[in-house]
Amino acid sequence: MAIVNLQNVTYKYPLTHTPVLSNINLEVKEGEFVAVIGPNGAGKSTLCYTLAGFVPHFFKGELEGKVEVAGVDLKSTPLNEWVRNVGLAFQNPFNQISGAKYTVFEEIAFGLENQGVPRDEMNRRVDQALTMTGIRDLADRSPYSLSGGQQQRVALTSILVMQPKILVLDEPTSQMDPIGTREVFGVIRQMAERGMTVIMAEHKVEWIAEFADRVVALKDGKILLQGVPADVLTSHLLAENGFGTSRYTSAAREALKFNLWPKHLHLPTTLQEAVDGFNLTSAPSPKERGE
Ligand SMILES: Nc1ncnc2c1ncn2[C@@H]1O[C@H](COP(=O)(O)OP(=O)(O)O)[C@@H](O)[C@H]1O
Ligand SMILES: [Mg+2]
Image (cartoon, rainbow, N blue to C red; front, side, top):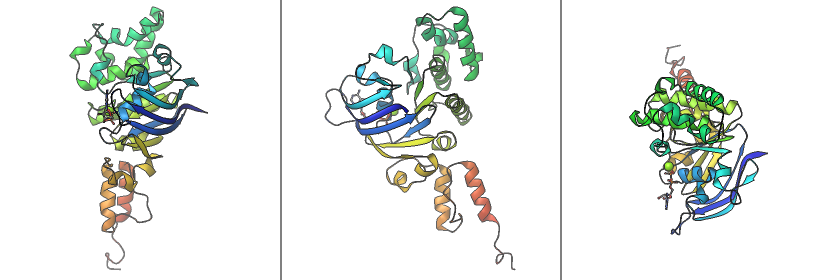
């Protein structure tokens, strides 16, 4: 049984005529890590808002089709109930900061506090979450004094601490360097291993290839294709439709034209696959060795 179930979902923002999501069908299993890719304006954030209940409950507009998460139907469930199952980290982490708290620790504790979680348990859970995302050293800082990447970690931590069944992340590493990005992908992978379902809008295909279970490619509000990263990320459809491609895939695709990538191999999506493939071709042939 899918924990996330979208059927024929079409959505228009208020006072607009063109749907931003068109006939989306998407089923996600519990503990699955799904990455959503797509050019700017494809509808990734809107899809995140829909999963998180902000569409239609906050944004209003016209939502058709069925959105069901954890067995609950979106249209008949108020937002305050919906958010118990789904946590969203916004594309801009600044929007996530409550403005009501002086330190990162208090900021992360805010949601638990609102739920009336006892202080001991609250402190323990906040501490655990801070350790997990690697920001314990920021606990006493003001959320406003942080860099964008640090704020993104705080946003992620404040969602994780709530232990939602479904974690929705809208470009959660956009302001991080490669090391930070890799770490955060690692944390998210771990959450999925523990049974949390993750849906993440993201551009960084190299990391998606390494960590995600499935990729959904969105274009003009429609699903262009979906499947395992190795298939979707090497598809010609992506290159033809303005999607970013992994540098490893692009390099091998070029190399193939000069017979420098083994024909029998799948195009690579990760560094390791690229290294393995290029190693096979770089050895000189018997003829080149003069044999
Ligand atoms: N509040 C809004 N009202 C009307 N149109 C919107 C609103 N927010 C986003 N859009 C439009 O919806 C489309 C998809 O946007 P978005 O979901 O942000 O895409 P992405 O995250 O893939 O860049 C864009 O054409 C954007 O202009
Ligand atoms: Mg977006």
